[in-house]
Figure 1 (tube, helix red, strand yellow):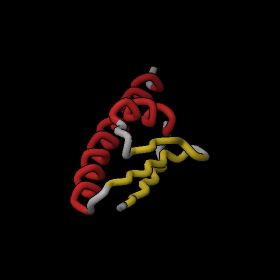
Figure 2 (spheres, helix red, strand yellow; figure 1 turned 30 degrees about the vertical axis):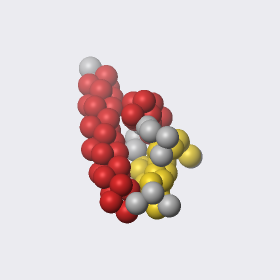
Figure 3 (cartoon, one colour; figure 1 turned 90 degrees about the vertical axis):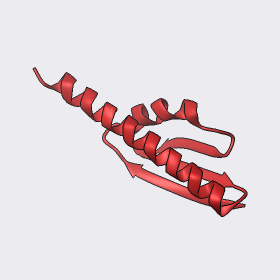
Length: 77
């Protein structure tokens, strides 16, 4: 078994976690710990882990950008 843990400090970790959690598979556990988004990914092979981490990071980036844009838009009068 191969494992990766990704920790992301985000302004709105709970919102980003909620946005990407529906894409979690049985191999991905996404949670928020002390305001930090934490994802643990387990796969049987290194290549599978790499692929899943890559997909996860793309989803994380998009969700974080949308959350940041939404928060910025709502904060501007």
